[in-house]
Length: 114
Image (cartoon, rainbow, N blue to C red; front, side):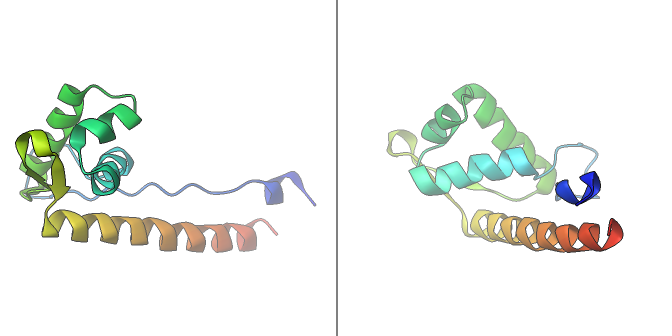
């Protein structure tokens, strides 16, 4: 087997708002943060699991919400946070795109380096 066949692809997807001047996008980092909120019920816990300051996580969420014009989180003070319906749909769509495009990229790469 040649060296090229041993390599693999990595597909990174960003969801952006073309109407926004801000360059923030929903990509791998914010997706991981939202997935952490979904699984742990708290932005603070999600940030800590990523070794990120809560203030930075909060800023990332706010910037992304502003750029996309979509509320991602419902905040309940000391009781944590949950994803909004739109936040859940965006995260699910992003994760599905990431998986499917990753699989397709692997297949295509294998065909191209044969």
